[in-house]
Image (cartoon, rainbow, N blue to C red; front, side, top):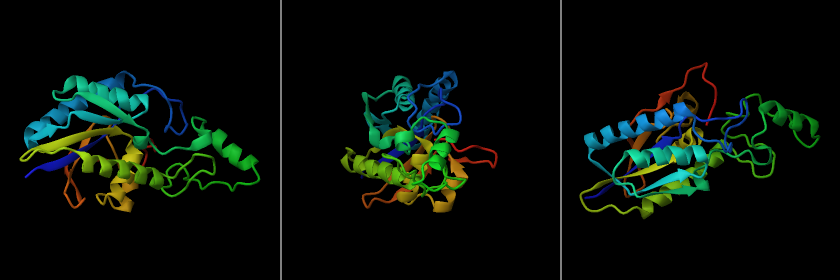
Length: 230
């Protein structure tokens, strides 16, 4: 009997505009981020040796540079990966027309426009809040988008008899956590309590009935002082 597995891998640390929603910032990994990706590939190799996973030859990555560079580092460090395919569907929650503006500027725009209400104080981390701008989405909507891509990916995976095939998907922490809620592996209250370690795999088994089960890798427990990042 064959088995299908999916690894969620959050991108490594990267160059970014401070105090701005980081979803669509186009910058690449910094030195720390490349080191994290190297370490993440080592961790994955250990998990493969322990659980007997066989890598699917194509990595799926968000189309943003930081994710692609993380995926490329994995490809260079692991045998059996032929290529990387990028997807907008794996991107983080989009904020639409105000992408890459800082938080103060976004809030000032909302305050100055008589059509809009002042957003809640926790708007950046509120799972259901969507900024009222063209192209914006809520975190729950982003998670549903990612979950849909993951389900379709698993459906189309080839899994030879007797093999435990593992598909690597590189993307963004908040979108992955909200996707995990939609896939039934996190409770809603756990979304805010957990984060993901940079460039480190969290692995799930997927049954033919579309049941997802966490089998390897660790979620990061969020501290009260930790800021909300993708």
